[in-house]
Image 1 (tube, one colour):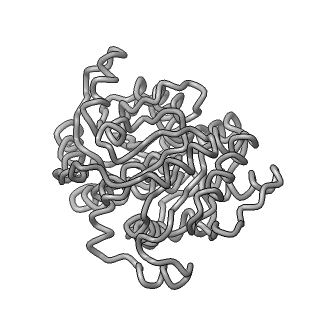
Image 2 (image 1 turned 90 degrees about the vertical axis):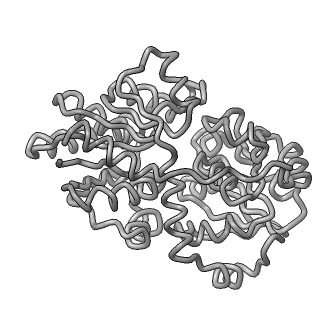
Length: 353
């Protein structure tokens, strides 16, 4: 079986790593990097740390408006697929790279498999939501992380080729924790102590592209009254500069983006996590750390239902209040589950041989 895997952004590198490891034991994988994330600490470092081979192709698309970025990816992926005898194109998540890969394959009548299918925030103003919906309706095989995702697809009339497989990000987290994370080095580098700081990550367009929302989030972080570690995504750093908002205060300590192992160490040892990232919401619950999400809705509704996550929007006082009050729920953390990556590989073998 020959699989073309399309990745482009940091979360996709993490999700693809355990699946790639499983696939390459018996099959051929052609890895295509769109170049959507191209910063050294957002791309190459992740490949090295996660044990992912260098991409077979890197389109080097970079950043830009959604239409141009997606169009450039579509053209580049299409040209590669025309020259390759591919059995299935594997895409991950909800980025422009996801949609471009699925659309290029579908136009060439190459089957599409979507990992993290069926997620819905029900907010069509989010570019990620558009990417999710369109990719799911192009896909031939849909790998859902949860029963909620399966049900979302069924409501849209998508029932063929749908499989509930669990979450590949949990596989990636488990593999990295087994290899070890640099807790002591991280604490020393940022002068923080376990359970005595708040970890914050902000990168969603809905927050970074709106100066009022971004300023309110930063005011909320500053009002918490305890140490806040804030790794700055390049999008956030640029947005803060444009808005004239300084990320530093008496309590906020900003730093460059963290590697995957550094991020897990930061999450694992935080008292509470503030984020707009879907992946971080999940990791917080798996690691037993309360999460405050600065969004109005989430595609990961299970994190809220379990009590490990609370949605507060971007009001500064609501953020500060929620963080101060955050504590682990009485329920245990999310229970272990079988390897999603192995299940995905087995299903691909059954369908495409």
